[in-house]
Image (cartoon, rainbow, N blue to C red):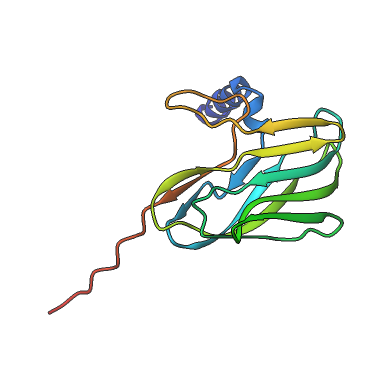
Length: 162
């Protein structure tokens, strides 16, 4: 009986979350260690209403040492650069509104810990969903930009001496 009650309470809590929590483009993983090479997947949960997603443009934070997007079969890939650094990546194709997909970029993360935001525009034909808001402390954004928390490097393992 306690297990059933726990499940029901958990389901009620999930149902109470705002719909936007599941509606935006998210970065996975949401955490990675400073200085590492890390593939980050940007997950698009659905189209704009019933309309198919036709493009996804992700701005790359200046702090990223490098960014290499993964091409997707059936999609074209555009890479924007400034002074040799990748500043934005756009995939163009078609993702039906009732399906999800993932778009990956391999990053060389900065050496310092930080929270990095990736302002993202999801285009659905003539309409856009702008996932570009960077939340301020203690506030929730209604259209949050995907984020990656870069954690400090792990301390080197201590050697055991006799």
